[in-house]
Image (cartoon, rainbow, N blue to C red; front, side):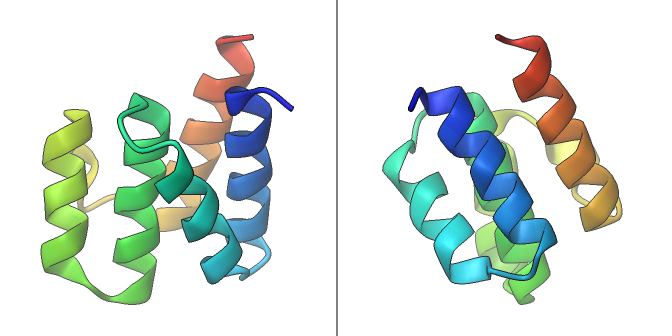
Length: 84
């Protein structure tokens, strides 16, 4: 499975409420912009604003920090699908 496929699966897991599994995948791909964005959203969902802000800065998506998490997950999925 490619990184993009794994991250797409992580988005699906996050949408299904499987935070821990999605987080584990995001951590494995730290440094990949999409993984770091996903990591930010996951911490937002978790309620850890400080950690979420850190990951938003790392991936250059600070402007998305106030977006709805579900909307962001869909945007991440779309970016991953477009990167194939």
